[in-house]
Image (cartoon, rainbow, N blue to C red):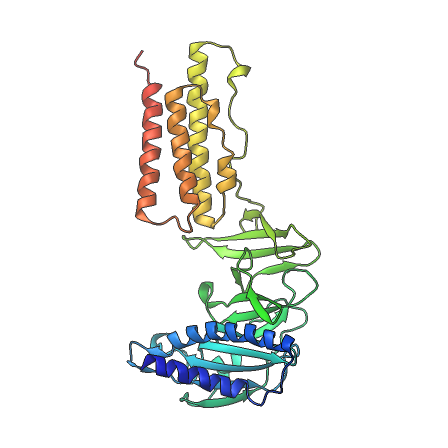
Length: 373
């Protein structure tokens, strides 16, 4: 049954979106095959959302056609509205999963959007939502003086400062405190390819763009709901979407969060008299610095989603002359690095490993340098 419905859906979409085609050249046939492959991928996502498991029924389908071309593209949408009654502001709002079809003379592609809507569909629509509803709408354009549009369901904007506009898909109310998030797509060779590198994988409504200095600022919240910002700068003009994270700080202040692992705070034994007491005091100081730096930078990475693996790797444990303490310090650093390589820090096993190696390092340090002389 599912296979039959899936085939019906594919044939139906193809019939309404690709009818009355003229004969294509071999070059266009190749472009068509790329578009078809992209369509199959998107249609699979769309089909997986077609059946509502909670209600044991198929969701209504709404077909939307925009009257005006957008950057030369004619745009058609099939939307499957959400059935979440607890999150609805109005019964007639249209907000849900969608498949967007972009077409112009020499280019066409499909994009799946998990949270499709705009200010008209969400706030203004008065028609009762029903299956097979067909809407012909005026497109809501982005203002010329803004990089991101809150009201438009999709738009074109040069967000990576390369002189060419990218396609931006608006994920309605998917961000922090119900703001919008945005997916950024590069369009090349009849294919829309999403940018999944930072900062373009985390763009929200309040992002700030500076085309002069080639910087992007993301305003964020950590797990404690404290606000902070992340500032990125373009590092490669030939591949313009490559940006580096250069600053994390608190908005409205001069406070910046800095790492410790890349700061040379250790004391070198060669700079002090070579006596047993001095060596022990230096090892006590240096091991404390290493322990604190690892704790500090790991907390930064966890709270602010900051990739600090390369920075933590710079921490030099060799300044500890005591073989036993140096081994425990290196082991603690190794555990921290292994967890920083993961996508998440919150799993219980990782937390347990951190606590265990931290306590072992700290206790061993205390035992070796205790005053039992």
